[in-house]
Every structure is written in structure tokens, then in C-alpha cells.
Amino acid sequence: MKYRLFTNDRGVTLVELLAALALLAIGGVLSSALFSQMSTNTQTTAGDISLKQEMNIVIEELEHQYDEDSDQMCLFEEGMTLIYGDEGEITDGCMEVDTNSPATVRLIGEREGKTFTLETVWNKQTEQTLWLPVEEPSEEPVEADIYDCIFTESVIFPEQVRVDDNGESAKNKCDGEFIFEKDAFFQNGVVLHNHNDFTIEGDLYIIGELDINNQSTIDVDGDLYLQDSDLNFKPNAALNVDGKICMVEDIQQIEGCNESNEP
Picture 1 (cartoon, rainbow, N blue to C red):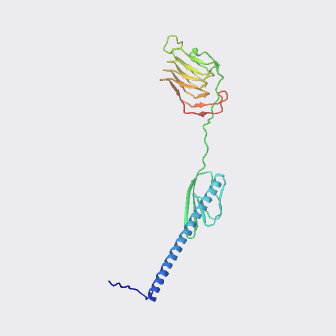
Picture 2: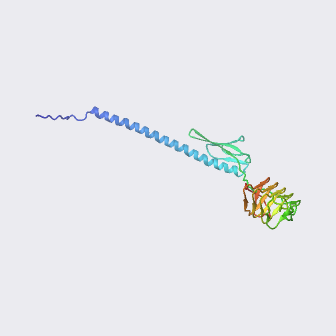
């Protein structure tokens, strides 16, 4: 059997070499254009981000001027314009404005043919507390016995008041009804046994324990002031307050009402 070996000794022709070089040149040109475009886009994006950051800083500085109750607003940033409500616009300088009222503001920034706008509303927030002014009692309270049943003057009970008799019992001297036509002060707490009702037409002041047992009710037409109070309500007990329920530090020297939603 005979074998033949085929060879090509011609090499690369000039035409083939020129074609290869042309392809390489075209590829280089395309790559260069692509990289140039990518670089331009990156620079443009970076410029946009930089301008927005500068605008955020400027708007914060302007809001600080607003919060400082200044009677004018100043802007000295090149390429930026502030439109302050209906009072006008500032490009480079200061303008008298009313900083005591809410304001809708727009900051416009321009750079390299592009425009960005930030818009916000400034409004001063006043702090609010739960401390409310209260009136001092109109008269000095007098000491009383709980089994007087009906009290036409403001009264005070230095010792703990316990109504231990069932309000429906024949032993209960007041038939379970205790009426206070003015203020009532309990300096060492109050305990109501079953079926007893307190009606306070003025304010009620309690230091210490407040214990309302079954089917007992305390109705307060005015405000309720509590100091160091331990509240204990049994089933079907009720505490109804038409005014405020105030937790105070010193019931003898009330400076305000730390209003509570309890009980």
C-alpha cells in the first residue's frame, strides 16, 4: 500500500495578510469608540451625582436658616436658584422672607446643560407636652367622717377611708350613697366594699390605694388627681371621670397635669 503526503509550501499571501490587518484595525477602532463612550457616560453620571449631593447640602443649610428664625434667606451657590413660596427667587444674594410660616421651596441646579430640582416643605414644629395648667381648690377642705354621707363643703380624710359595709346591707348608714358636692381629698387611699357609690361633683384627690369592689362606682364630674396610687378594680366596678385623670408627684403642690389614659 502506498501513502501520499500533501504539503502547502506557499505560506500566507499578501492579500490574506492585508485582510487580517484590516480586521484588526476595524476591531481596534470599534473598541476605542466603545471605551470612549463608556468613559463619557461614567463622567456624566458622576457629575450628575455630584450636583445632586451639592444640592442636598445646600437645601439643608437653607433649612437651617429657616429654623433660626432669620428674616432673610441667602444663597451664594453658582448655578443654583431658590424659589421661596410666592415671595420670589434667589440666585446670588439674600432676600427678606417670612420664616414664621410654612413655606414650599424649590432648589434648581444647572450644570453642563442639565437641570435638577429639589422641592420640599418647611414647617416649624412646636413641641407639645402633657403638662396642663390646673386651678387650685377654691377653698380649704375640712376634715370629715365618711359616714356623714352628704358633704356640702370640700372635705379631707387624713386616714385611709374604708367603707366595709355592703351598700345593700341594713348596717350601711348611708344606704351605699356618698355624695360630695365639692372637692374630696383622700390622703391615705380609699376602699369601697360591694354596692357602694361615690359621687364627686368637684375634683377628686387620692394618695395611695384606690380599691373599688364589686358593683361599686365612683363618678367624678371634675378631674381626678392620683399620687403613688395602686389601682384595684374588681369585676363590675366602675370609675367614671368627666375631666382629666392626672398623675402628679406631689398632690399638695400641683404644678400641672401629667395626663393619663388610665384607668
